[in-house]
Image (cartoon, rainbow, N blue to C red; front, side):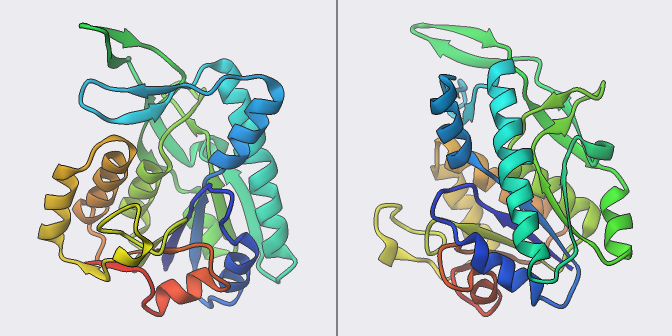
Length: 262
């Protein structure tokens, strides 16, 4: 069983990924983003995008009710159903869902994010949280031959929709589904020693080296690396980070393209 995360960038080859998923020949769950589409819709609707930096240096998107509505349109609406359409036309019996549906992904609403405001600190509250468990629905769908395609939002303690980091959702699903491999398809050749240099691809990263690199990163990349570490803490054996812009992104990743973390 494979767990695939499709990034939400504008240049990912979704059609190529759909080709590969339809030809995979083994159970799979897809988790996808839609951040580029969300930002495009937000601009058209006049909804400002805000980013928060916590006192620990971790970056996240501020989500109020207006931002949540835009996310619903972009993630569980347009991107999710268009991706399901791509898969269905290729013979894969895909089912598009959000983490809220059937409480597939259960989370806890954030009690507040501590940020710096000049020389002071303050708490910021929004409609976001952290996933902590996955329900049984994905397993039921897999048993019956469906291809689940999952996205935001997830459910909080009381069944309300909340935003969360897709990397954290993937980590929770991996703990439950125990995939043989987790594949991240992104807008880069893989993990780069120098983010500005596509030629600096690192082919393989031992666990110990990954933890060292995690300690040296900041912002959104630090959050992503924390989530990848959580995959291994939950029992994952292999994580592949590969280019989602190629003609056959998933096939390439499974054949050895990109970065392998074991």
